[in-house]
Image (tube, rainbow, N blue to C red; front, side, top):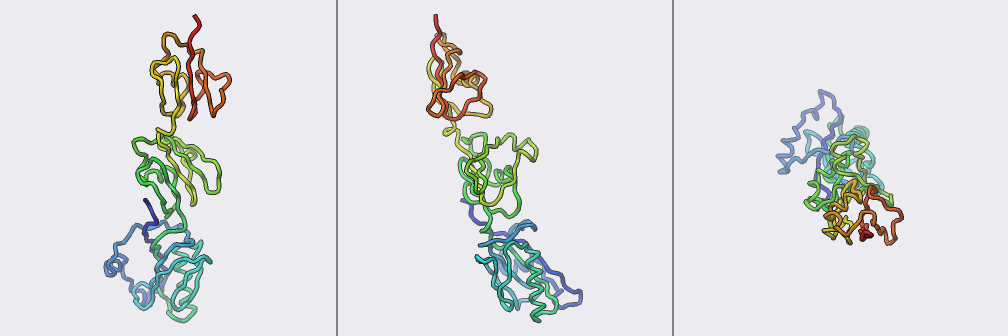
Length: 278
C-alpha cells in the first residue's frame, strides 16, 4: 500500500555575495554527510498543509536547523524564532519567511535558508480496486487522472476498461474510459485533487447476464459502448428457435420497456431471448 512518501523540495533564500553564509554546501554533499539518500523533489508550487513535515537549515552553517511538523493551526515551531506560519506556503515562500525572521531577530546578518519537504501527509488521493498498487497516494504536485493511474502501476489483468472518480465531497462518481484518457485531450483527463477517490472495478463485478434462446448463456463483462445486439453476439447468437424480436431486459429489478437492439447495456442487466412464433 502506498503511504506518505519521503520527498525533498530544496528552497533557498537569497544572500549577499560577501556574507560568510554564502559559502554554500551542495545539496548532494549535505545529503551524503548525513548518511541520507536525496529523494525526488516535490513540485515548487506544492502548498504545505497540516501533517506535512519540513526540515529547515542554513546552507553552510551547522548552528541552526530543525525538523518540524505543520500543526493544526498551520504553524511550525523553530529554534530562536518560535512559531512561523507554514500552511498554504510553498517551500520557497517558507524559506524566505524564516530568513526574514532570523534577520529581524538579529540572529544572522543575511543567511541562506533551505526548506525541505520530508514527508507529505496533508494532500493525498485514495486509489482502490484492480490496480497494481492500491492505497493512499501523496500529491506532491498537480496530477491528471492518467498520471495517477500510471503511478499506481495501471490496471491489473482483470481490471475494467474505465475508472470511477469521486471528487472530494461528492456523492456520485464520474466514469472515465482508460482508452480516452490515453488518447483524448485535456478535457477528458481531469486534474485530481486532495481527497478524491479513484476506483477501478474488476471485470467480474461489471457484468450483464444473458439467458433464454441463445447458444452460450451466462455472464459477460460490460465494455464501453456495448449494445444489446453486441451482447447477443457474446452469448453466441440466438438459437434456431430464438428471435431477436423477443428481447426482454430487466434492469435494477424492473422490466425495461421497449428495449432495442442498439440500446446500450448497463451493468447488472438481465437479458432474456424468447422463442420465435411458428
